[in-house]
Image (cartoon, rainbow, N blue to C red; front, side, top):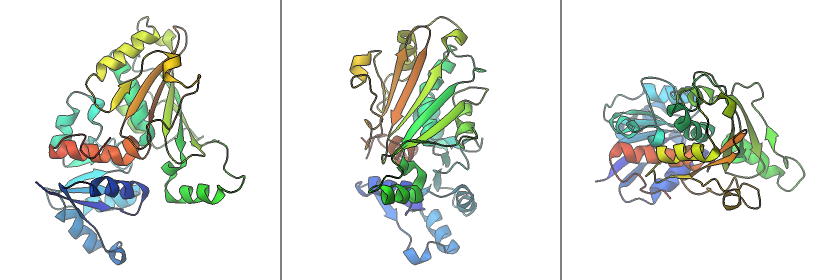
Length: 315
């Protein structure tokens, strides 16, 4: 069976990569809008409703506008913006979130694609909150280092323009008002009742992302070692094709003590690692911010919704 797909916002970073992933597939027919009609509301509405699946790769307000154009009950909308991620009328597009999440994605016509930082944070913390090890009212401190492609076309252009000079060579912390747009989903889908203290950093590399979350063993509901924490996470994701829970082995999981943020680039994989000791622990989850953090996740959710092989077109 062939499915028709339209990407509203096909020229953006996420849209381009979704198109690239789907262009390799024989079961997908991509509908494209003519360049001179990209702002033609009637043409966008026609294409949105002509598709079995429409991806929205747009700013929040534009995504909301596109949703308002949908009048075909058969069209499934997968929104890559932040506009609908905690909207109860939408399904969060993270299949590994819970045992029944795939059923929800399969049944839904409105799927909100997770944010890149949020995906790593949620996948790392959710099993520990669900197991009752981390009380829901714990405030977790976390940071994330990500490649500059996560900032979109303007940031990519800025970094590429600076490549030959001395500007933009060092990592740059941002979102220092501590009100990052991913916070609502990071709280909602981990099961935490308190928003984390979250501080992201953009690095001078194209893509790759690692969220580091400090765990407070003194606040655990029961005593646990790093091996215990690793076991809880590994059991939670047993059988998940795209999630790899690393052993508690510093020599095996690092390069001489250094952790490679770019190790999962060009894949849909997530690695989760536990470091530390009984007094101090650190969780690190890494992924490709343009893969499992954006376009790969969107295609994975589409596969689940359509009932085809979940890993189709993904590595």
